[in-house]
Structure formats: C-alpha cells, structure tokens
Image (cartoon, rainbow, N blue to C red; front, top):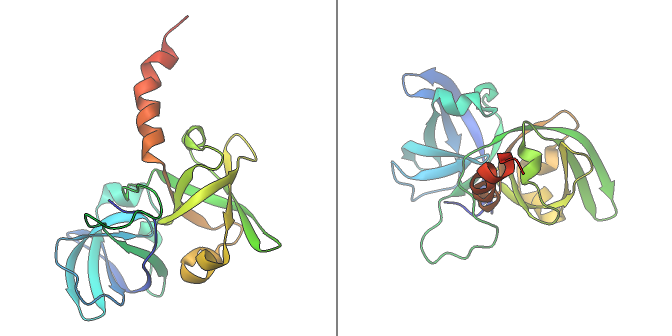
Length: 200
C-alpha cells in the first residue's frame, strides 16, 4: 500500500531481461532497504530482489510489462519512487495499490499562471473512474483531477513542488504515463456492474 507521495527520484543504471523478468538496477538514496520489500517504481509495485548502498534491483514479470511502459525502460531513465507505507504513517495523498490500470498519453501541456495543466488521453474505460476533484495516480504521484475535458480524457494541474520533486515536470505532448484510478471508485464500479446491466 502506498500514498502516492513520491519520496525520491531514482535513475535506472542497468536494464535487461533475466529469468526473473525485465530487471532493473536503480540508483536511489536508500540505505535501509530489505530484500523482499515492496517499492513503487513510477507507480508500479515491484519487489526488491537485491540492494546495496545507494542502489536496488527489481524485476517486472510479463503481465506487468504488458500493462505498463516498463518494457521500454533503459539505463538513464529517471523514475519516481515510493516505499510502502508503515502502520502509523501519515496518509497525505490517497490510497494507492501500485497496480497500474493502463498507460495514458499526454495530449497537451499548458502553463497557466502558477499551474501547469496536463491533459491525458485515457485508455479503455478508465474515464468512468475519473471524478472532478477526485484522486488519480500518474507515474506513482497522487494528483487531483482538475477537469474532464472530454469523455476519454482527464486534466491535471501540477503545482511547483510536484514539478520540482518528481519526473512529471518533464512531461511533454506524446509522453506516456502509468495511470492508477482511485481504488474506492474501482470497487464501487465492480459492485454496481450487475445493476448497470440489469434491464429496467
């Protein structure tokens, strides 16, 4: 379980295919990791396989690669990192599972006064789970839905802190990002599915 509050930005030092999946060695300023712990890498929950001073190794299996951008990651890429929550931690963002629902494409980036507006084209039926001023996770960052400019789109409003302390400041038109919808909305959608298909 995560909060969507990125605690570090790491850099991929090495990437390759292994028997464990698509494997990455990531440089990060952690000195107390444990093998087997969960860490969100650009919003995807992965398991620490090895670690040392200033680095750790994770691997993504084929099912994770299929629903993310991970297959295209190479050395030098910067990634948002968040370690799993501990009991008693402040929940400053929202409940994030680290289960990427799909990959969205940036269709517009506009600076409006002190906010940077970013429009995303959403895949599949994710738009149904977006609520104005509700929560959404983009590349592991907990954000507020600013607007719904189209049936298949969502607009984000990035504050200066987010731009400076995550990778989202580098987003450009055409960029691809991981999206995780609010888990509460997903459960409500699932619970209501039979009622929605029932004929009146």
